[in-house]
Image (tube, rainbow over all chains, first blue to last red; front, side):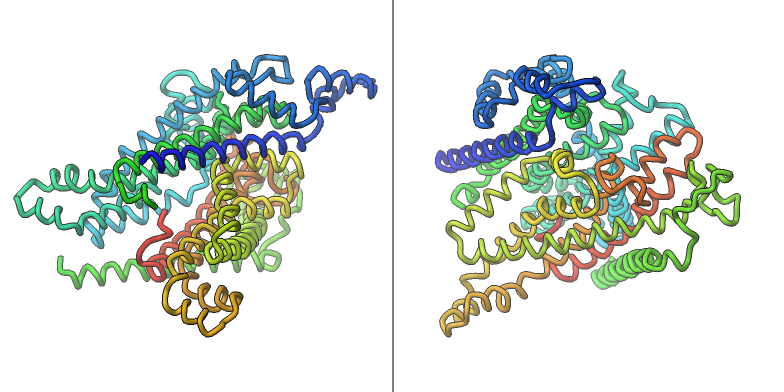
Length: 307
Length: 283
């Protein structure tokens, strides 16, 4: 087990190292922030640009800038934004919770809906309710997320005027962003639950539980669901990256003050420190979720450790 | 319910799935290919006919956009972008991914480590953020977007193929081919490839659908194809501006994406059940 843990941990550290290096390098290819900052400023001489670059610290050699970033990362200090000079950690401390809150809500809604539906579909395999659930979920995962968001705005904000079309202010503003993503994620999850449940229901202990005369709900939710929980948790964990990517897009539609909005604003002004911090943080989140899932999986199922 | 009736119910459902999927995908491809013959010009601006409501004017069934262009014609010709991106990017990713996966799984060692660690790194970065950075460097446009999708997606095929090669490489038919001196090239492409292509085809179908979704969201965000070219994502970006008083501008292009992606997903689902009953590619 110790070997397995160390191996996975080293892998995760390597991935993070490669991601940060790649991101730091790529961002510096996107363009010169000094030019962006002086756009429309009238007469700007080459000497001014040099001064600005020096002030921003982007005239230093790449490796030095990268090392500064890594050292800062350990102290949770990501430098200051090129625009306005606000500290990046401050910007992130307001937008990270907004994104995580949304991601959490989406995960919870989708799991709560997809487990009973997926089990229902598996139990009634081949019957009309199974086919109805399968077709609906296939339609659900064919929706472009940003268009679904637009359509919800059209119906609930413009026509019915029930919900605010954008921003983050109170419970009502959560409903549409969370459900947009949850509908699409649920469509995927229902199919996952259905197929793992179908496999589990063929096991002998399910037959034994039924033969003992346990109620159908006890058999399904206590015996079968627990046993297919492991693959399901893995799938849900692996979805986390895709979910964050989707949320970045949805944030734009709803003007949600999260990391996605922050990243978009940062890239258009070549605000290196902000963009670098956002991508690094999101990658760290994805890598740690996957690492946790791997470790949990290894703890529960000894076969994985020896692979 | 008897097992027989259950089975026939399921197979009826499966064939219905295939028929609807094929009709949707085929129909949309034909409409897009023959767009110029069937519909009026997608770029004809008519400022006297701005934002006409749908179903009210026989010459503009889906209404018109803020510049008086016919929405039906634009939706149909906008499909060309999405379909091109979807099919070309998948073709590119498959070629690259399958070759890398075959090499990594068959030769193991150094190449295996390089390919798999590369895959880990890519999977840790959210696609959209990778896309924003990439497009900020090289700019938007059709070719760049296709390239971006290829480099971010080949790892999926590489992983899938590598896994299958690992389980096949010690089987008798491969060992005997090696024993009688068949070249490695021939073993990779004539003996291994046909045995693992099923799941790859399923993943391809689903990824064409997925890439059409990604392309339209990038274009919607203003990072994809030129806003002047008709494209579904671009039309939806316009639609968002006018959503208060002209719902049709943002409804029809979205329906077009939904139907295209649904058609491909139906086909992919059907293919998966026919080619890959163990569900290795299920998501």
